[in-house]
Image (tube, rainbow, N blue to C red; front, side, top):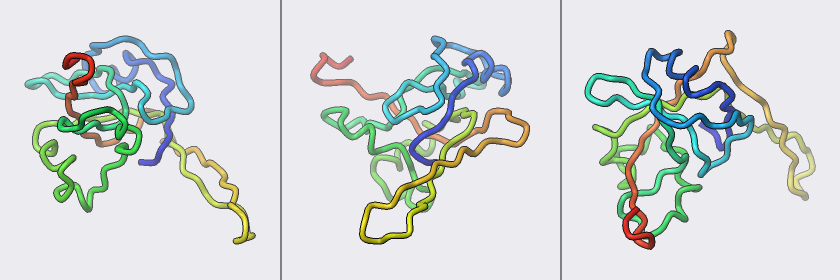
Length: 148
């Protein structure tokens, strides 16, 4: 997935689309969700699917602060089992991130001497239903806030 996506439907709408329960706060519709923003995510608790709210950007449990969250938004399938931040999460910390669509960028400039402009393209399903994007999650406690 790329670095920005669109989340317009409500959490209840996402939960209904996936036959899940909704357990969270309703977020405002957002056409340009950026890393570290609160997002909806669906997990399975025992055998029950639940849509709740998480922060987008993985903070490894061993991290001393949350500065890495914005840079850890994409896990590549080719290296999941090699990266120490992702490997321990593969077995039991998977989730689905429901998105309405996402943005991909194409370089449109032709002059290699200057920074090239980029054109965003919005990608969504033909029937405009939510897309399911694979995700990993973990719990991180901030040592500077007493472990909250």
